[in-house]
Length: 124
Image 1 (cartoon, helix red, strand yellow):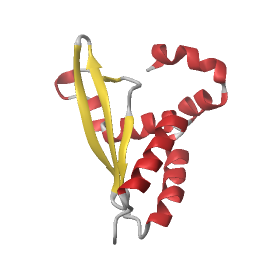
Image 2: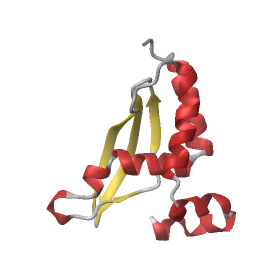
Image 3: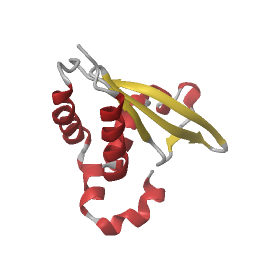
């Protein structure tokens, strides 16, 4: 089907990055799972600078930085929608569904307790 116009993608990404950073971080963790679960036994940690770069009917493009000790790498990956969306009207419901799917108990409390934000760096 036709893709959402770039302006829509940009607006959605900006909203997600600004207002739903925890969800974007969880999306990035899933998108980068192969790298984060490391070949060579390296344990990569994903920093909190993750960004949703674009959305389409096929999925989302995410960017972030993963570090293992002093070594860091920039990551970009697709998180596909399965099945692909039929129209841009499906984008919001799918992102909301993805949010609920990704917000496991260990991350959802970050959203509900503002005081917890100060300990972000220690738990990432």
